[in-house]
Amino acid sequence: MPTLTTVAEWTVTASGDTATFKHAAAGGYWAPRVWSGRGLAIAEADLPALDKVLGEVLKLPVYWLARSRRADSAAGEAAVWSEPRYDLEDEFVYLAGPCRTDAPAAGYRPASAFAIDLVHLRGLRIRIAAYRAGG
Image (cartoon, rainbow, N blue to C red; front, side, top):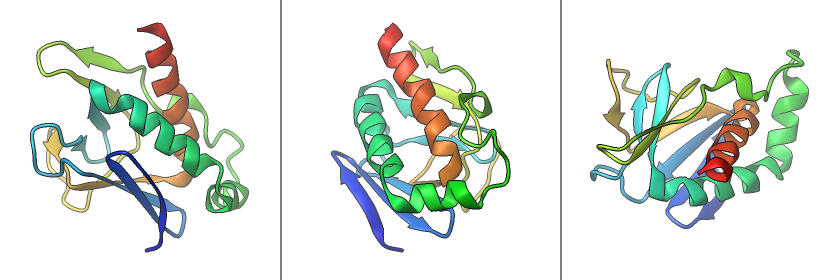
């Protein structure tokens, strides 16, 4: 898989219409947490870099090609993701949405990598930007 972009702690690659995200803290406490097929949790301190890397991917032809192949006109809408919820206890921001790992398990688990369909990245960026603007 070719690397699409790298920003701060994040590296994004793509295969077909799927983006795979890797964070430098993979395996550590601050690693992203995924409940495969149900949601994503990111350390609040990592949101600015994730927002930036999402913006970089949205500029790339691979994103727009994936959007053009998607018959669903609502693809990319923020509604596919929940409003972000901050957990004061662990300092993570949780979003329900179409995020997945290769090893599905119940509950949020640290993930060395996670995948999201390229068409859903715009909606995720909208939710993260709105959260950051409000806080």
